[in-house]
Amino acid sequence: MSKVNINDISKITGFSPATISNALNHKAGVNKQTVSEIFRVAKEIGYINENSISKIKLVIFKKNGLIIDDTPFFTFLINGFEQECRQCRYEMVIYNLDQRDRNYKQNIKDLIMDVESASVILGTEITDEDIEPFKMAKTPVVLLDNWVESMTFNAVLINNVDSARKATEFLIENGHKEIGYLRGAYRIKAFSYRSMGFKHALRKNQLPVKDEYIFTISTTINGAYRDMLSLLDKCSKLPTAFFADNDIIALGAMKALQERGYHIPDDISVIGFDDLPFSQISYPPLTTIRVPNQEMGRLAVRRIVDLIQNPSNTITKTEVCTIFINRDTVKNLHKDSKLAYR
Image 1 (cartoon, rainbow, N blue to C red):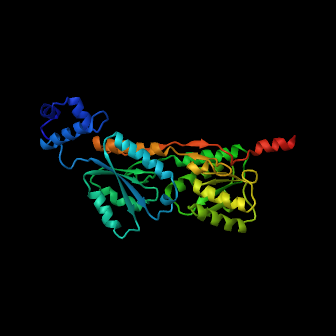
Image 2 (image 1 turned 60 degrees about the vertical axis):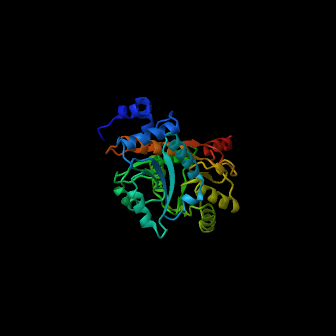
Image 3 (image 1 turned 60 degrees about the horizontal axis):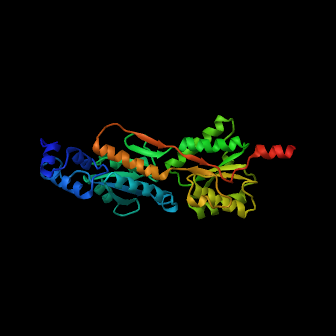
């Protein structure tokens, strides 16, 4: 930092040191004209340089778009992100980074060399290998909806393992012992964590993980429907319940089950993940796991702002807890067995 200080800016602008501090730290309560004047003077006298970070880029990474493109989940997350950027007085920039783009490598280079913007990478589809170049970024980077096992990036993500475990245990508590898994064919890291939670719940309750009850199907709603139809035509026995990697997969599979004459939840129970808007109006309404996606977006912005304003070598992993939403797609086998006994 140069020898000039906030008091020098105060003398030139006439604003109080507190107002200047709030403006420079992008805090709420200072009008835009005042902020603009304070930054102009601060740059002019050398308190900050021209390369100071003024933007936060939300980098929407796509490997194939099979997850990002087929769900409204991310719309809510982006809304929360935008609101927090505005609150913190940073300009938000959406940057699409598609691995299928012929200019992909140059786009990454442009990103990591940009000294005016910090980056939050929406990494739902990203792999550890894909994230490697961002180690060279000139400004802070936060990974959103993913985690790198090497612990080299700050991250904000869903508590996938515990959420899936809780959903599976709900099925067990309702008397289900034959439980299947609707497994997304495209294996993002979040799905792998959900698989861990599912299997942990079964083993914890001394129930077997049966391979014949693990159905691998597409991650698009139409693809899940078609794949489930095909699997139903081949299999001779079904579990009493399924846990699905997400709502899209669950709803596609439900449509196929109903088309083949199965009644939900009387014949088979289903639990999804994400609580998408149309999960409330499916028939029957889907039991699922609600993710506070807007707050995830806000938390990512808060973390990147903290790194901008208070540089640190400490890496943090923030896991956002979910809410279990019990609707109408899980049958209570204990209750039904008592009625039959009477």
